[in-house]
Length: 295
Image 1 (cartoon, one colour):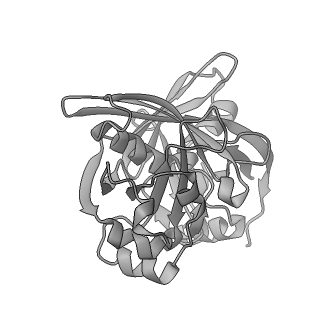
Image 2 (tube, one colour):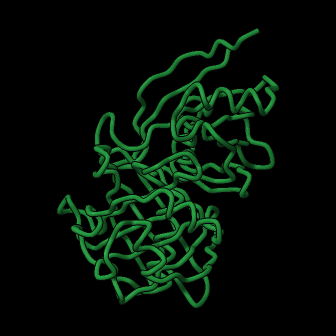
């Protein structure tokens, strides 16, 4: 018996957010080719595999696969998998647990109260190359006037690198015309293979930023909700004091352009060169079942 669960992560409501398949393979030694095949069969943006039902070296070992490749870290799989572990593998529900991913141990906490969010602490950020509006304009199909000149376009990583691109307003964000050939030309010379574009105008009035994320090189043309990318965004906002101070506690919307409205919560601070970056969201159960593998 190989149980699996389907959840929506960063969901605003039922059947929104970013879907995730979580498979418990503990007790079954499956080759990597089988894990990739299961991820392809699930055909979600990511599928995670919990390979032990009790902690090892303090954390639950988890592997993350897209239909194309294994990832060292990803945001919504971390939160969704932690929620499944807490619901189905912990007799006494802990408010904290650790996931051991390829990128290293990632702490996850569970908030209590009327709006029980799941939070993950990101690794300290790395800041990479800066780019120009002329680099990104052909990729996004935007004019140079669409970019926010107050802040840089920059590669940032808290586990997975992203190009962070500030634009002026919602009209610019909604007006993106994705040019995939120009995108693949750009990423040939970059560490980052995915792009996050954000602006300070939002579709929902309670939110603080609106975001779009494109990651075609790892199998997702446009992602409905991306915890890893928003962790990089949080670090970027702190580094450049986008809100005028080295602390943030904000709500970020994503997925509206592809009819998967999502909501992510970012909290963090910077003191000297020390960062604390946290990304939170809701996890909503959708379905569960058992896998039948070919003989």
